[in-house]
Structures are given as structure tokens and as C-alpha cells.
Image 1 (cartoon, rainbow, N blue to C red):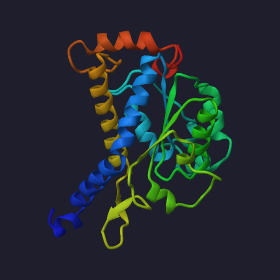
Image 2 (image 1 turned 30 degrees about the vertical axis):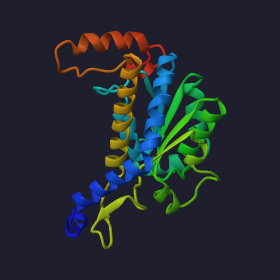
Image 3 (image 1 turned 135 degrees about the vertical axis):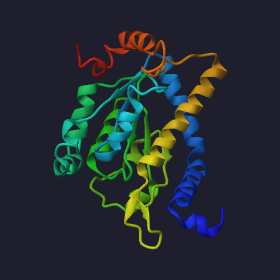
Length: 247
């Protein structure tokens, strides 16, 4: 790619995607295998994040083409949509993450996936630590560069408690534009969503090699989608109460 093109936002995003592939390709394959092993053993994938990382929790849950054996675990206070200032305070407050895990009660053969760009706030750190203490392996989707450039608000980082770390390569501060003094165009959601899609693709390839057919949602807007999804809801509603509101 010509140097001038690399300086423009599309080129810089593509360069980061290539960087992610190089840095995390092996970890993505390992994460895919871990998740497939858990689902085949009857486990659930518990997925967590705070603030804008909750976008990734939505991306993993009840999503066309996504795994059906996924449970979102989160505290209402970390959602920024109705009180943004509260959400920032909540993910920095000790005890919130531990309470979320206690309520969800993950146990082997479950696994956990925790999304946090910096991985430095107590909320994602506590979730990962509590899951690991329950012998539930953690996949951390985070950025070492962002962690290095962030304020340390916990004694450890998300990555410290993870069995597998998928490094998204998000730069400190998240923003990309303009290149000489970045102040806008956050990239963490793009990179984390790409990493998750790569995990799903690797999981699908591995399942095919094993002759397995993991439970996946179908778009409700294609013929037969509602029927297939209804069967999956019945299969998982008792382990994933968020599918039916706990009914």
C-alpha cells in the first residue's frame, strides 16, 4: 500500500487489521478451539464487557450466524445509554464485576470471553479473576498497547487472568484521525468485531473438521429462521435466561 494511502483512515484501519492477524492469529485459533470444546461438552460461553465494550456483548449474543450457547453477563450500571457518567464510575468501582459473576455462576465446562480495550478497570479484571477462580477459562479480547497507555485502576489487568489473550492492537486512546495528532474515529469496535468474526470462522472450520455442527442462530428474516431459532431458545433458555427474560 502506498505511504499516502496508509496515512488516510481506511489505510490505517486496514493496517491495524493486518497487525491483528499477525499478532493474534494463533490466539484466535486457540480461542476457537476452547469455545468449541466447551460447547460440545455442554457448556455456555459467558460474555462480558462494560461501556462501549457492551457493543461486543450484543455482537456475540442472539446474533445471526453466532453461537447460541452464549450468555451475556453484565450489570445495568455499566450501560452508558441512560447515564453515561454512572457507567464510567461503575466499571471503576470494586465489587461490581465480582457480583456479576456470582449471579451468573459459571462453572466448568463453561468458558468466559471478556472484552475490554484497556483491561485496566476493576470491572473486567474482577470478572476475569472470578471466572478463573471458578476454573472457567477466560479469553481476553483486549489491547496491550491500550493497556500500557491507560491509567491503572486495579492491581492486575484483564490479560493477567486470561488463559488466552487476543490482542486487538488498538492504539492508546482508541482514536486514529488525524494521524499526526489523533482525536477522532475510534477503532476498538471495528477491531474487536473483526477478531470475534475470525474466532467464529475458525470455530466453524474446526467443527467441520470434527464432523460437528455447533448450535448457531439463523437470521429471523430468512425462511425457516424463526423455527430454527425457536428450537435453540428451548434448548438454552434455562441456562441463558436472557433469551426469554427469565420466563
